[in-house]
Image 1 (cartoon, rainbow, N blue to C red):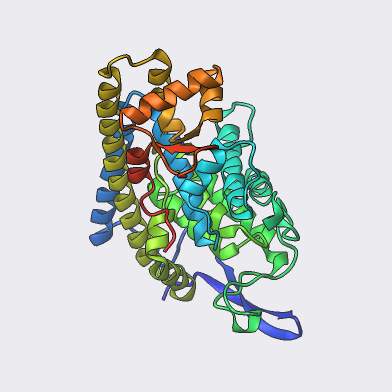
Image 2: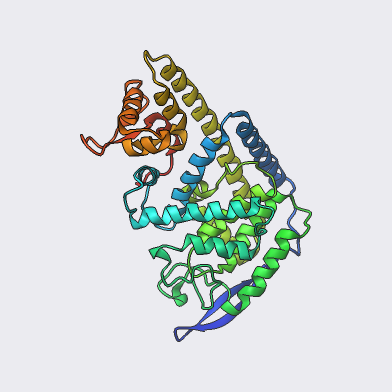
Length: 386
């Protein structure tokens, strides 16, 4: 059995528990090797990722898909942590900018702010590198709302935390003691920026499992850990645009996800984790490729129908071209998008309703909201609550 760490006794709330201190990456004695079934799994994942990257290059407006996929990820990664907002809730809030968000929608919006910050920093020559400093600032933005109160946003924890259970004594997992966390994070940073015989796609999966084992924050570890995979894929140029996120796969296989993480800590089963992780990469990449192609085909067909409309206005066409980035609109948001008057925006919306592109979704006569239903129907898969 591979040794992946040790246990250290800590006293929390008057009871003594065993906290797990993971060994630094990479896996040793024996080392993790890509051979046999695992090598085949890697080849399949790499090929699927290449197809997704190519699909992103072939569509004329990659920003459309980045906009939608990023929001879908924001909703799903938040739902894993118990947030009840759906993709429609988020997009409706964004269309109604004068309306205060619910706490759940605010939490999803804070994730979007955190992701945008991290990607902007990494893309800027003067920005922060991929480091704990960057992740801390990202965490600060993630936890800036009411949900972060008392959770030390942007700060490495100074107290013991645990996962599952009502206290450390009956928890599913007790991460390392707080005084061990800085050295463990420093070792993780060195691994990310060091050399390894394993390919970057596999190393991103290892960095995630190590981050989750360390659990460096009082809250928000799952979302930052899942975000770390996406940042590494983009930072290491495995994808030119952030089109792949694993939260939906982890959500749909949540029990298996936790079992695989536990098997790494309990018995050093890195092979089992990487097999599961690469299966997720291939599955999600194939789904994202198909989704990008379907959405592009849908928009192309609907554009042709709008342009063929008798008396189609320039403003209706302009509004249509903005729908992939604003699939839910109001008259007020259409005014902002088109930079025009209320009567002109209303006529543009009415034109797209007549073309069966937009549909009113509130049933009200005033303060109406319109959705690009066909587009949303494809994009929202996996984001609705039971």
